[in-house]
Image 1 (cartoon, rainbow, N blue to C red):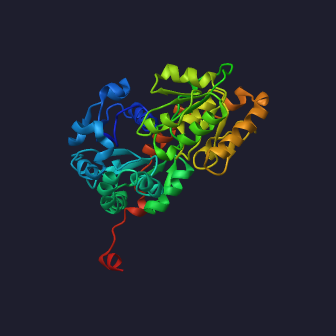
Image 2 (spheres, rainbow, N blue to C red; image 1 turned 120 degrees about the horizontal axis):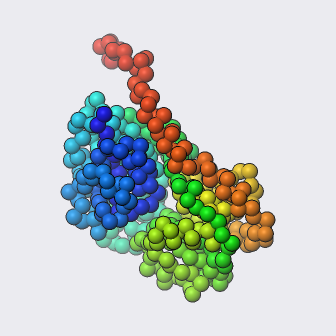
Image 3 (cartoon, helix red, strand yellow; image 1 turned 120 degrees about the vertical axis):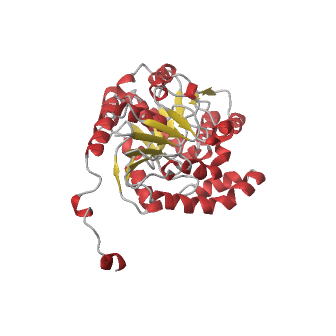
Length: 376
């Protein structure tokens, strides 16, 4: 069986790329298709596969600005001859065109946020740049229509959480099953806490890292931020001496930062939140906005595993931090770590293998439809 994996871009090793890495282990002979590819920024597991990048790859330094051209680039991939295509999607990856005999499964991290549920937030961001707004707004309606039509090219949707399952239904009116993304939970460990909090996030507006920067600057508490993105300069200008921007760090350094922090900070609503799972795998409690995927990650059996607040903003975050500090002496790292096992790599791989082993077309759907029925 010839198989292909389609991913929006391979320019780093964040949550989506770790899903691709797991798919590569399940499908060791699969070819990979992607819009943008930077071999030095991905794992050896991915590099061992044959990777085909789109004609847009020469402009990968400005990949975010090339969104209007992405549908055309995806549709130019020639996927004839593949029996199975798995698209890994939080962008337009599912829009590839496959043959009628190909089984297309979409593992969806989220429908495109900037076109659907977070469109108003991105619209506010674009208003800061008149040129960007002038270029993007005329395309958004077209892209939203294209994205909806592209969802019809998928045979089966798989959602990475209940939160995303609901979004898929809202945007595409398609049902989906849930398979939580894989996390190497066994590689994380716990150490005695040093005097700092930790945030791990791409620096983009909807992550609301500014809420954390403002609170920790005002309160004088220490915060380390791992990640990079277009918000870096603005966030840096808001920060005081107790906020440290670590940039992108190695896997080993990240595990050490998790192990020694007091608690993990997540001020924005996540589709799922792999970083939060990595934090609880390190035995660290979560402090974050009580919405989205975080509500599925919190270990229900341990009441001091998470300190959530209902309304976005630095004020709610501050109250949750203060609540945590009052309860910090009751934290049981081992109990928190136990809650991460449901998100293990082994569980993900077993569920995906089970999905692939099932027939995509039950017998009752294979019967021939008569002309009268087709016209009814």
